[in-house]
Length: 288
Length: 349
Image 1 (tube, each protein chain N blue to C red):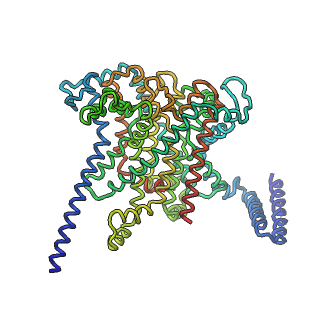
Image 2 (cartoon, rainbow over the protein chains, first blue to last red; image 1 turned 180 degrees about the vertical axis):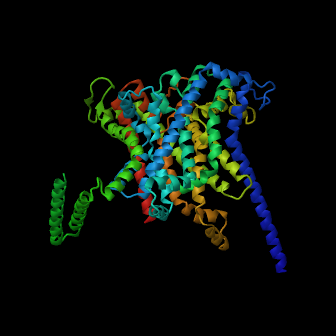
Image 3 (tube, helix red, strand yellow; image 1 turned 135 degrees about the vertical axis):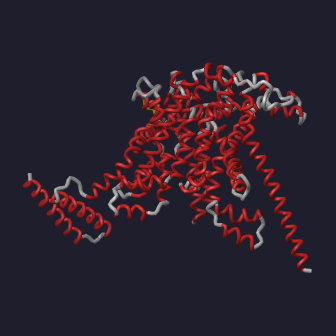
C-alpha cells in the first residue's frame, strides 16, 4: 500500500523533473535566439544586395547569389586596412601596458608594506566611481597642450593606466596566501623574482579577465577616438565604420560586411580566453 | 670624510638619547608612540651611516615597493588625477580654450538651471537610468540562475550570452537600426503582417516618445551578459549545503530563491547596482548611434547629459559650462553611490 504511494510520488516527481527540463530547454532556446539572431542577421545581410536585405517575403538567410563581393568592396570604399592597423596597434599596446603596469602595482599594494599605501590606493578607488566623461574635457585640454592632439599616443596614455586594472589585480593577489611569498623571501628571492616567478604564473584567470575587458573596451571605444583623432589616416575602426555609415547610409550590405570585419578580432580573443573568464571574475572580487 | 660621518653619527645618537628621555617623561600614549617611531627612525639613520650603506634596509624595502607602483601610478596621476582636479576648477570658470580664463563663480550653474536643452538631457538620462538598472539586474540574475544549472552545452550558452557585450557598438547598433527600421525593418513588418497593426500606427522606434524605450531595451540586451557573469561568479560562492538543507525542509524553487539565493547574493547585487548606475549615467554612444541619424545630432527627445557635455566642449568651446554639466553628472553618481553604500552598511549592521 505505502509502497504504491511512494512509487506514485516518485513517478510524479520524475515527471516534474522532466517538465522542468523541457521548460528550461525552451527558455534557453529563446535566450540563445535573442542573443544570436542579430548576429546572424548581420552575417546574412553582409552577403546581400541592398534590395535583398529588407526582402522579407519569404525571408532568406542565404541569398541565391551571395554577394561575397561586399567583403572586397568594403576595403576600397574606405581605408579600412589603415583603420584596422591603427586599432590593432592601439589595442595591443594598451592591453600590454595595462596588464604589466597594473599587475606590477597590484603586487605592491597586496603584498608589500610601505608608507602612504592606503592614501595611494584610495586615489585609485575614488576615480573608479568617477565616470571618465566627467573629466574628459580637461584631459583633452591637457593632452592638447602636451602636443598629443590627433595622435595615437594620446589614446594610449588615456587608456593604459586604469584604476580598474589595479583594483582587480589587487583583489586577486590578496587571495593568494602570504606564506607563499614569505617562503620565497626566506629562500632568498627578491621581490621582482617573486612577482615574476610566483605571482604571474598563478594569475592566469585574472590576467585573462583583464585582457578581455581591456581588449574589448579599447577595440570598441568610440568617444575617446572621436575627441582625439581627427586625421582620417589616424582613425580607428569604430570611427571609420561610423564615418562610412554616415556617408553611405543606404549601402546596407557593405555596412554589414564592415561590421562583421570589425567584430572578428574581438570574438577571437574572447573565445580564446573565455574558459578562464568566470573563474577570473569570481577570484578578482568583482562579484562584490 | 670619515670624521664628518663620525660627527653625524654622534649627533644622531645624541638626538636619540634626548628622544628616549622625552619618551620616559611622556604620559599620553599616542604621543609616546609617535616619539618612539621618531627615535627608531633616528637610530636607523645612525646604523645606516655606521655600516657605510647608502640606504637603510627599511628605506630599500620601501623603494622597492614604490618601484612596483611607479609605472602605473605616474601614468594614472598625470592622465587621470590631474584632469579630475582640473574638472572641478573648470566648472567655476569661463574659458574658450584659447583666450584668457575668467572666474565665473556659480554663474555656469545658474545658467544651467534655465537651460531647457540641459533640462531635457537631465530628464532623459534619469529616465534611462531608472529604466535600465532594474531591468538589466533582473535579466542578468535570471540568466545567471538558468546558466548555473547542470545543463548540456552550458559553456556554449554562457559564451553566446556574452556576445552582445563583446560586440562593437557601431556594428551592433547598425544591425538594430535595420531590424527596427520604421518602414522596412522585420520587426515592424511582423507587426504589420502577423499582428495586423495598421501602417500609420507602426511604431517609430528611434524618435519621439519611443526612443528612450528603445535605448533601454538595447542596453539591457547588450549589457546583461556582462552582469550575468558577475552573478554567475556570485552564485558559485553559495554553498550547496544551504540548498540541501532547504530541500530537506521542503522549500520549493521560489522559496529557495527567496530565502537562500537572494540574501546570499546581497553583496554581489550591491556591486552590480553600483556599477550599473555609474555605467548608465555615462550613456552617450548608444544614443548617438541609435537615435542620432547620419550626422549624430540628438534632438530634445533623445539627448543625454554626456552628449551635451561633448557639444558644449567641442562644438561651442564653452569649457566652463561643459564642466559644470559634468559636475552635475558626477554629483548625481556620487549621491547615488553614497546612498547605496549607506543602505548596504545598514543591512550589514
